Amino acid sequence: MQDTAQPKEFYTLAEVAELLGLSGDTARRLVAGEKPALPAFRVSTGRKRGHIRVRASALNAFIEKRELAGV
Image 1 (cartoon, rainbow, N blue to C red):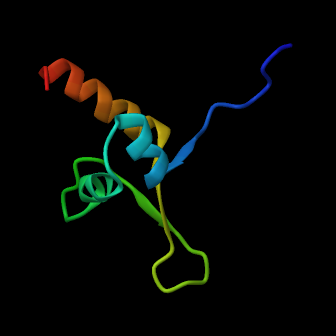
Image 2: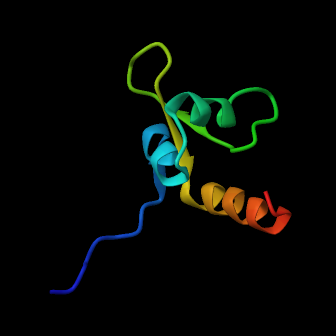
């Protein structure tokens, strides 16, 4: 059977944490602050703060940067 699933374009913080083997709190710290280590954005849900999403391209760049730096 052929897999027809489209590659993900955006990830939740929970998915980022799982993919990187981190806790949810650590994933939140990566996207926090004025100069986050991992760029993210909020998706409005009608709630006060909304949900945070990370672009797949930003996550891939974050991983590649760490691999090249030997971290």
